[in-house]
Image 1 (cartoon, helix red, strand yellow):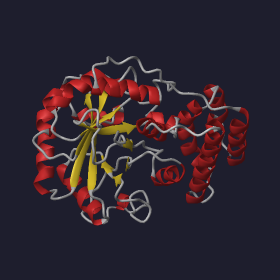
Image 2 (cartoon, one colour):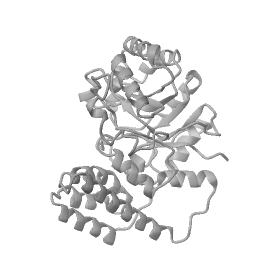
Image 3 (cartoon, helix red, strand yellow):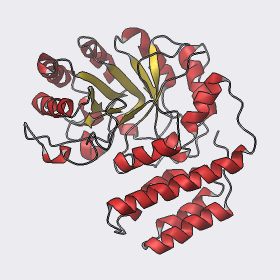
Image 4 (cartoon, helix red, strand yellow):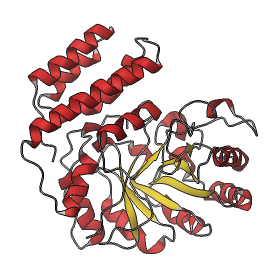
Length: 358
């Protein structure tokens, strides 16, 4: 069986360059990464917010990282594409999926989906001048209604998108309810672009359920996710061998909660027997990863306690790797001093065991 292709979805405030680089040092299974979205590309050359390590090719692998932009302006998107190309990137991604009201109310992210005329005008402007830079889109089914995508798909089909990633919820849902896998499956025959599924893959079991629906005749069962609905918030050349129309799967909240998830999915697909004493080895790897990320962030911040905000963001997901996750979160969320944080993390790894996420 061919290996499934996986990507890691972007999360503002979490999956930045330090996170991606530390993650790759400790875990495998992810074939492709995306930056959290950029905005405000006002200059033709050397835009200020494209000068940091987040997109610097000296700090990133341009062959596995796709920069993402949040915009409705074709000229801004082209400025972004031009500067990314000059840095060595081969593809950019447009965010048409962000569900948060502060974005959507400005008709950006998923808030653009109810306006097919605006989408068409924007894409016409982009593809008229983008040249050989690959251009992909990440979107939802709609903002107000899951039927909104029906008017958008014919527009997408007019253009040579390198990839279309669909999260089958509407923007108004945020992350509540369940991803509509059946609706995603029903769209597959009508989409020309290489297609990627995103949504509610929290475990190997939920991946198998969702893949079973997409690739076969099964009906989806409710995902037994440990991640609360109120939580804020892969996919390279190749195809899912069970569904040739599908290019791959994007992981999101599930891999933040369980960094082993992509490895476990790849192991499942390759029928590899996990090593003995796996639980002990896993908790050692997870501990080293958390320490490495903290030290890296601390170094980048010059020792400033502001790193605690980003570490807490991660722990709001990572707590679900352990038994008694709410007990862990109560300890972590109230911390304001570096020493307290360091002691709390040691207590977590000394006193708690890993749980099985299904």
